[in-house]
Image 1 (cartoon, rainbow, N blue to C red):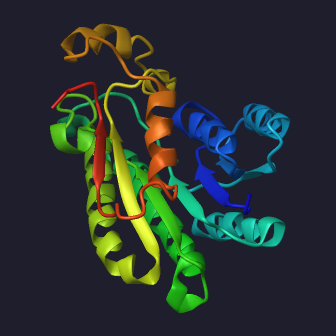
Image 2: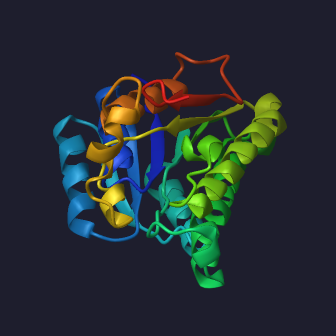
Length: 250
């Protein structure tokens, strides 16, 4: 099997970790970007290694441009190629209203979720573009259904940052389609991961699941399966798509 390499930011937990494992199961070598918790990142790498694939974890703060450059440079040196990039790193802050937001909170949210996502996409394009000496590839952005629903009285700032990612997906897909790069996004709905605890609501999935048409939260693996499909050769004519994985929460 021809070697294929994917870089996944935010790969130590949740959707990122599930995507890393699903990609490895499909024959990909995997680089995990993470900001904290080396032990968790190493555990994901160990599972991938046990599958017979190559993997490594690289610490990088996606809110820092220099560290983003360093992350991609490590991939260059250690793997020599990049075939897919999963733009997954992001944060959710404590639930609040717009009236209670501060400039500091907004700056952090957009620096990581939006500016960081753009800079990572830039680095991926520079390596994949056929007009720049690359061999093409796929970028999958991990957005959120919140970008459409707005997340009022909870996460309007987060929803706005993901809305920007959706626009980037649509524009970049058109920009690089002739350069051998496909760009798509998944928009997960209520997914059972520990990101809710990070936002101060560890029971959020249990509370809100009855409002989802399928009457449950989704799993990280269910999102990961869609991501791996979008970055694979099984979706060669799919670009500029925003794929919702929301249990029917439309």
